[in-house]
Length: 432
Image 1: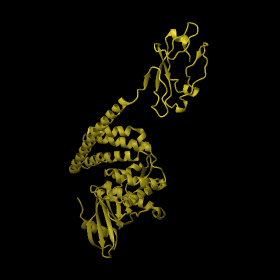
Image 2 (image 1 turned 60 degrees about the vertical axis):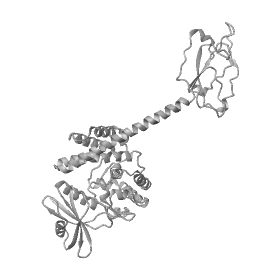
Image 3 (image 1 turned 45 degrees about the vertical axis):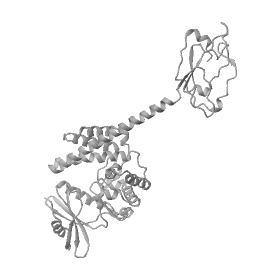
Image 4 (image 1 turned 180 degrees about the horizontal axis):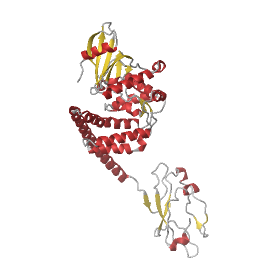
């Protein structure tokens, strides 16, 4: 049963001796897990109360309490934002309620943040970078979860299998997520400290400044893309790119190139996790909401794929039309070299083998056109300056004088993959 702000105010007086609430109001939070309220006491001070709705949520608050104590004053002083401070706690049965000192600033919706100034985008990027650059010993010493890149990917595969067993995930989404998780290259990243539950409700803003970051219940070592998923879900590309740019500038470690792709996948997959959570809690309203969001996502992706296919077909048609006007790659007959600045030379040029002048000494006559063709491969990179150059006349292997142009040794290395087999009667006329 949900607790009202006034009920939470009464609980807070037991957690913080001497606290006399004068006003109370609801505070944004994870509605499925916590009841929250903001209090104003008789001295004008403000407080925040978080009361868990089930034992798992209570365990998360107790974990956060341990995490906050691990942040020594020296570490907090290095952060560009404030962190919560626990003023008191009270246990009621299996659940523990926590009261926190007030932090300046207010939450903003994702729509408001996505249209914010570049100055605020810089603050968000710097806050993310500061979290990800925290020493990993902070997590390890607190005995918090730590995952390698492969372990993190395997956990997501396991969660995907669990979501598939519900029978409520559109098959197109299951295939999409499975293919992404099987792409090993996508999951090569350097694990770092991540907040793990970052979203707009855990970000306090005042003007163009990020004043505080809250909700430290899921701190761990893992994929930095976890903390970008909520940004990508905003579908405001300009906002996301601005935050990412400032984040990259502020980080000590260079972010991997697949960060946003994994963030997009994690943002989509969060809907499946929401469905699993709703089913486990037996919450029919949440389940219906999750199913509706998953169907909407599947429809949007199908529409985007159809549009992308149309654009690809149009681009292919344009390329085909352009290729139809291009110079042929194979030219039949004796071909003079292109003048400087003219069209590029074809990859393969077919010229005629000259007829022999007599039986003993075949003379090369380039003008002969009725001979059986052979293949001469010329590299595309030949410089224009070589166009007028010709090999000095010399003797071939069978003593025949050759006046045809011969490729250089460096050119020969580019044609070794192509072998030409000539008819037997022409072997004596071979000049290469």
